[in-house]
Image 1 (tube, rainbow, N blue to C red):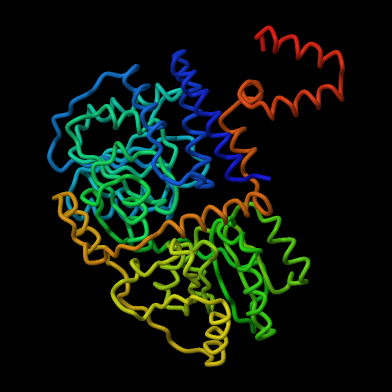
Image 2: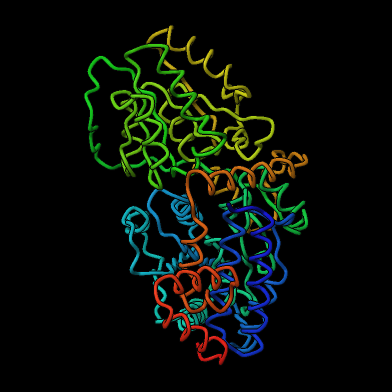
Length: 503
């Protein structure tokens, strides 16, 4: 079982080895240890803070050892958008690219990885006919070479502003943007509910709602003067509808979508609630788009004999087209999908959003701030009751018109942020968020231990077997036991190599 106590212990071991790696100038291992610690903190939020000074100082130490400080004389109206993800219709890439075009900026779009496993055709299409642009992919065989590639781009383009659309454990961007002077760095706080590296390289922190702002001020060590709010709007896909793999004639469809981890937790209360909704009418079916570890979901479907009532349709690019063909949308919980909920609002279908008082990380009102038409539901029994009433009314028009920020307003807001103004300050509301932060931590531990184990895979992603053997005593003990059972001779050899430090 994974617990906060174990995670804190693991993190201490990682940081002890990080210090040793730094003293030995073993920067490759040091960077992987920073990324691993960051990844674990992102997954589980097991510390009482969202700022890790030791990790950020370690990255500065590595950068100071390898790279010289570069001072840029910025060119006016040049904006570098550093996009780790490059993922069509996900994140906030397309919203910012559209805004930069409206503002007539030179767009320098930088992707970290050319050999990505997902599509970025829609992102590139956004600026296909925009002349004042440059598109780069970082080149290199290791982290240091990728850093050098990013330095080269910066020195060539000389941006006035850097928009950072970062993965939470991005060490490459951190080191380069730390060593660049003369340019203003804007953190697009995409994962506002959990840990990320980058506090010390952030000049302006762009939040999309008050919850993230409060976490940044209370747990990230970011002063209020650096925080600005800029809500976003959804990108409505133009993909051709891919169809359904079930018969929908005579059926009413409840739809939802997310990465699967967002619906695993609280003893699968999301699916228990869906089950209650399906019992209201035999012609109701539930459709879930998304990807991830679906073992617990499939088991729930099979155990409750719901194979003809609940359908998993996988990861889809045609989400807006799907929304045109369903009858209701249920926001996911225990973790809400903000962009998916916004897409449902844009499609004008009835939306039901559950936000318990302990889960303020699910509150989307700041994204739908123009009217009180959209309401959260704070009790699951109430959600079922309200759905039942809506369903009994039959087909009717629902209008969520003008709840969200528009493209033009988003661009205007970004322009004012570039001018060091705080255009959406009226959305700021201060409230204590630590209890919700701990609720998130509890949910992620539940998910790890019962539904979606990530811990071992996370270690394997950043460390080799021999490195784990050297670093973690419990891993070493398990390996000794396994080897002893399989081969006594091999066990003796292993013990010898370890004692003589030849392993």
